[in-house]
Length: 148
Image (cartoon, rainbow, N blue to C red; front, side):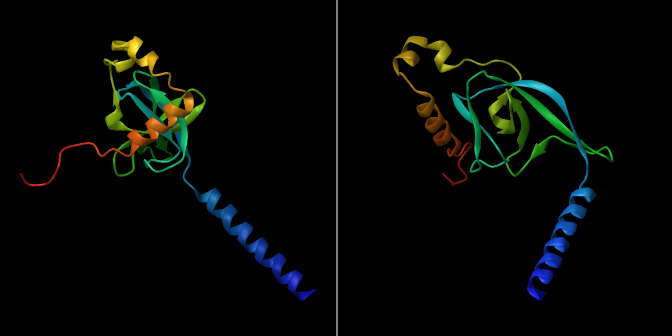
């Protein structure tokens, strides 16, 4: 009986600690900052600001995304997240993160729009698009830092 009482006390203590942390967490409000367009051939909306995080959905070139900003209770605005400057975005019913380098203010020229017959001839399924976008996530963008 003493073990059950001790276990109930531990669970109550943990629950109280979690609830107090939730209550003391800063309240953030989200608002639309702008609408941008995805500028790569394919890509993913991630659950967290990391290329290794869970994928929420896959998008293709020129897909419009709503870029959001968060404002804390004390007025601080948060627009970029993580090491590689990720934006918080809404894409359809999904909310997640896209690297800021992959977004543009205007629609660009896309392979599937420039060469639609070639692109349609590839017969890519949704699964294929997901895996190609996942592979594209792993590319390291930018210039080499190796001396030439």
